Length: 263
Image (cartoon, rainbow, N blue to C red; front, side, top):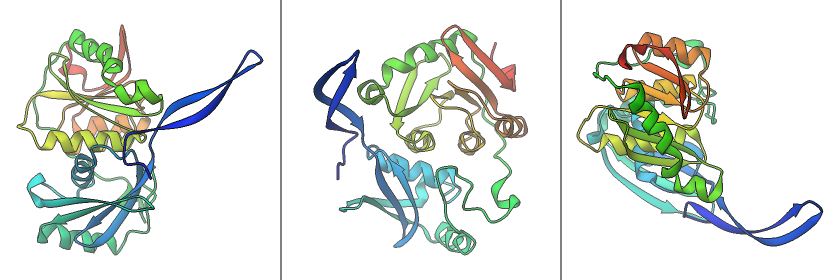
């Protein structure tokens, strides 16, 4: 089992009738188990980099923790089947997690498959209280810089990126993963350990309901996505007061909710 971000593999390329042998780098994907105070909660398929950021960001964006201070320790344990993240959390969130687990059937990458009812699946988003005002040119600056910051994507062509950008459009932090939700959780975990600053999130994926929900949970006022938003993502952004931008490409971006923050 690899614990790096990429693996070197043998490959054969067919091109215009000719075969060439060689090697490629592919993104590493492995099972990552979140274990809270000795109780296994969920297993995610992820790229095994920045896993402590992943553990913290997932715990916060999923509402298991309400503060980074509630995570007391995170031990990374490699096994022959994957990686276990042994999280030690304080008593109050652990008691709530145990109660929540009584109604949890399971979870997949869609993010909602473990819910037993519509009330559990479609939750109320955190209302944005953070202030932000940025220019269209600042957003475009971040969009133009994103590809150059994605080192693992350049190497493998197989990962999503999530970037924390200043209001001037400078990329301050970036996390990558084979899963778009995972990349965002890694970023949110990294951000939570820093002093609060004004900024926004830029992601390489589509803007789904869960991507909006996770961004709002961190009180981040703007989410820009390289691809399209979904209808439910737009509805949730409107309700939460989050500025939602889709089709974020060089020279063009489309605003779907609360465009007053961009001028």
